[in-house]
Structure formats: C-alpha cells, structure tokens
Length: 502
Image (cartoon, rainbow, N blue to C red):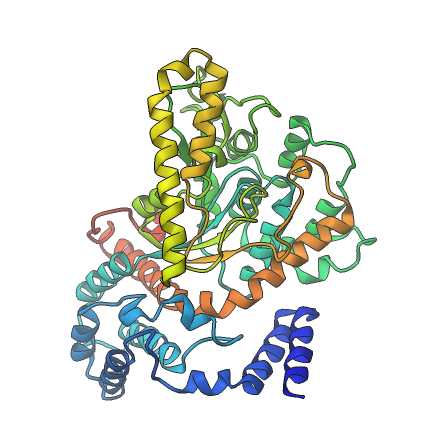
C-alpha cells in the first residue's frame, strides 16, 4: 500500500502540467517517504551541521539585536556557497523537493543579513564601507552561469530549460552556448525582459495548431529535410536582432558567450562576448558556432567598425562549431566573470548516453572506474602525441584526430547538470528538422528535466541573486554622487558598473 501511494505520487509528478503541480506532488511524496522528516533533522554525515547551526544562530542574533557593526564583522569572516559541505550533491538527492531545512535557513539568513545592511536605515556604517564590503563579498562568493551544450536540433530542450528557470526567476545573467546552445542563449540574451516574457510565456505553447507567440512561430517553421546553413541564417534573421555582443549586453544586462573553434590549424578557440569581442555581430557568431565541419561551411565573423559599418572581423580567419573544442567553457567564464557555480543544460547527442548528471562518486567501485577511464585517456593522448608527425602528413586525418581528442578531453557536466530524461537520441537526426510534435515534446522535456533541480538552483544561487542587485544599486549611487565607480577588486567590473559606464 505504501509503495502504491509513492508510485501514484511519482506518476503525478511525471504528468504535472506546471511546476506548481509538480511541487505539490513532490512535497506530498516527501511526507509519505519520510524525506520531509529527514529535512527537519540537522544531523547528517554529509556536511558540518554543527558549524552551520552555530553560525546561523550567531548571525540571526546579531541581526535581531540590530548589532550592525557586529553583523558586518561576522559576514566579513566569509560568505561561502559550500560552507561545511552544504553544497554536496547527496544533500539534494534524498528528498524530491529541497534539502535540509538548516541549510535553507542558513542561506536565507545570509540573504536577510545582506539586505538588512544594504538598507538606508542602517546608518551606523558608512556608504563607502558598505560599498567596499559588497564588492568584496560579490568577488569572493562568485556567480552562477548557465552553460548550454552543442545540441543540433535538440536545441529545443535548451529552450525548455531556460523557460523553467525564467518562470522561477532563476535564469542566470551569464550564459554560454555552443552550436544549438549558442542559438538559444543568444536569443535569450538579446531579448528584453518583456520579449522573454512573450518568448517563454507558458500560454503560447500548449495549442500546436494555434501559431501565436514566439515559441509557436518557432514551431511553425518545421520542415522534414536536413537543415542547411541558409535555413539557420533565416532563423537567425527572424529571431535574433542584428546586434553586436556589446549592444545586446547594454540592452538586457545579460552576458552571452558563444564558443567558436578555428577552421585552420595553429589557431585557438575563442569565446565571443561583450568583453572579448564587443563589436562582433551575434548572428555571424552563432552561425559559426553551428557550422559543424563536413556539414556546413566555415564562417567569417562580422563586426561593426568605428564608423558603425559592417566589416569582416579578422577576414583571413574562419570559424566552426564551438562544441568541438570547448563545449562548456567553465574556466573562461570563471576568469571573465568570477563564475564558480555552473548549471549545465547538456543535450549533445554523442555525450548524454555516457555522462553521469550527479557529482563524481567517491565509493571504491566508482573510484576504480574513474581511474581506468583517466588512465585510458592518458594513454590515448600520449599515443596521439607520438604519432603527431606521421599524422601531419595527411592534414585531414590530423584535423579529425585533433577534433576527436578535444571531444574526449572535455568535461560535459557542471555543479547542476540537466539532461534529457530520454538518454538515447539518434545522432544521425541531429541535423534534421523536427516535427511540430517533436519540438513540443523537447521543450516540455526541458522543463520537466529542470523541475527536480529548481530548488537546488534556488538555494545555491540565493546569495548571489541577493548580492548582485545590492551591488548594482550601490555602484550606481556611487557613480551619481562621485562621478566614478568604486574601487574594483581583481577581475571584472560588475554588470551595473559596466552598463553605467557605457
């Protein structure tokens, strides 16, 4: 009887028409399974609950007593997203909805403390000291990014992921994409909030025969034959405004990062964005990132010159699909924006059957498996190095070998990885148009695959989502009063400062 009730609730979760319906079923499942009681109990060997409880009580006491200087001192000791191991994946796998209440309470208390100190009513701390603290806190805590993999026509899954995150107010302002992920991410980052509300409006999708709203305009474009470069360009012209990366960032405040790989040897891959290539047009960047070698021609990027005219960007160089060299550019995002938390939408049809969407396991059998895989990868790389010169005699073979090695050596998961529930997708159909029903199903699958991760995303991004607008407000006020931004920590200026300066 107990198992039957749980199975019925799992079916309700699978068949939910919205996140709210899924959430109700998930909470009820936790009550029935005992996970709700597990969440109320602090103790677990998975994290340092004693330290977190002690720090929570201390911060709460300082805030309630309005000991503002003491609160600032306590927060200056450090704000960490993984304090005491509270970010560990197993802590988010026990319950269907949420994690330990102690963790949620601690994260919420940090956010409340930050909002309290940012309040104008707190006048015992100078504006300059507050600004300095919030800049340091933002720099040290880091940011979250959404990385969308290469996908071919599975890109509609990415659209479902973005839709689910957007509706919950959890879509990061830093996004990267390669191939199909570049197309979806660029449309999102070049669209205003109002345009995104229309693009991702849940009311625009259900009726397949009603071509209203932007998503149904996407649905209406389906064909049956293989996609061509001209088809991709038509989609870009319709859905992606003809803007440079910098123009899109100034308009929306969202950072799009497009991965492209060089078509020639002896060149390195690039991550195109408003910082590294501000004047490059996004349409050509996306077209290059979708140019799979052997299927689509390589692309010359275009940029706006000092007269506002369109011209070739490094006309001697051509670019192709970014997923070949760097599907998920985590290290570059860390360097550019201080990102240290990655949400990955992974739909690469050659990868998803083989990846584990959880964090690396630490049991003996798993460690042995990882060791065998790592050893095999090392030997393959060593063999490729030994035969580099012989392979160089035939450039096509060398290029194919380099591409294969690059694909093999990449990481395809993040802190939170969202991949299709259906693991096996025919790679041979990756370049074929999808039917309206398939597009509808992929968007729906993207949403449903995201729903079980929503509360983890909410908890793990709560502090950064609190810090960013506070820092934005303080830096803008500093510019208005003193005519220049406050001093910056090592690394990149905040989005607020850059928008104001531009």
